[in-house]
Image (cartoon, rainbow, N blue to C red; front, top):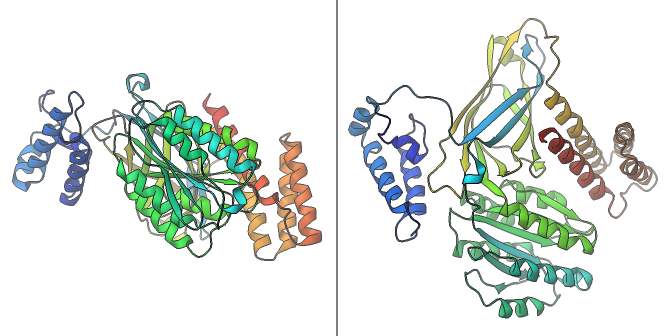
Length: 493
């Protein structure tokens, strides 16, 4: 095929063996993004016409077959995104017991980041204004919301929703707003009522959808200091709806009363994460940091679509960077964003059952990586991911790669606090104490004396009182998570 002939598959962002349904869906998504009624940017009308032409050819089986006959052999190199994979062992062992293997996946930009403009934002702040927020917390939240409003670029959209047992749109989504008027509305927010997160999340999602655009980074930042009761499943369903439209969610909890397990689950459905704000004075710093992170987004989402492998199970997946957090396991994994200065790192723990070890060559993971880059008008071609290991009679003496060892070392600390918490929740306080004492030992060996002291204090609390201190479990969880992130970033630099 001549080099100047368009690649219809690349234009739609699909594999050459894509089904008709996949081609139709890819065309619909591209048409939504590029339609001349919606876009007036230079060159996008031509891209829309190319997309139409690609669909007309590939959606017709006869024309597609004729077109395929003109194609050169497929080159399995993505021109936009690169990825690297590291395994904790070079091979598996033929035996009658299940085996664990760890896989580190790194995904980052291949092209020059400087040549790509920063995408505009479509952000909604969903702010808890229940009675417990009154005082310093509410004052700091309002001041920070006004600061973010003033920092907007002309192309950015910021909406603000305040909620308690009902929700109110304080600043509606839109461009060229009267900032003084909107600042006055933010200043008028008063704390009252109970915490019902679903009301706030539903109103926030509606505001995002008003200016929803694939060329923007579309994101909800939920900030609360309390727990919601009875509407958790409805909130999680909303998060799934948001994920289907490539809308991210970040959960931020202030103080000790909020449910971090719930906020983690809510955010992870969209590839997002939760953050812990221990003191009101940290609200401004963490909200501004999050806002700046969204501005520095290179790819706002990476999806891993998996094909099930017999007797091979992903036990656990954790995003090491750019924002630490558990990845929800399912047929489609929302791995999270890629930042301009920080690639995506995800560590997988995979359990291989005995029946799978009868093969000489084993597929651990098979699927495709799909990346969404708001600043690119055309879709990013997907990447086939087939991770295999040979199965030998004897284990290899080759040591694991340093990158895997470093990631596992940091993740071990985080997993220890998870086990301590699970044991305490199950009433197994002796086991929880042992996990925390073990965690403290490891922390001391790494020079983390302050955090080790906190772990020992909580172990003593659990042993004597059968309870955590007011902030104990969150302090340890988010501090070990921060250590994990720090370790990942050190390896990149």
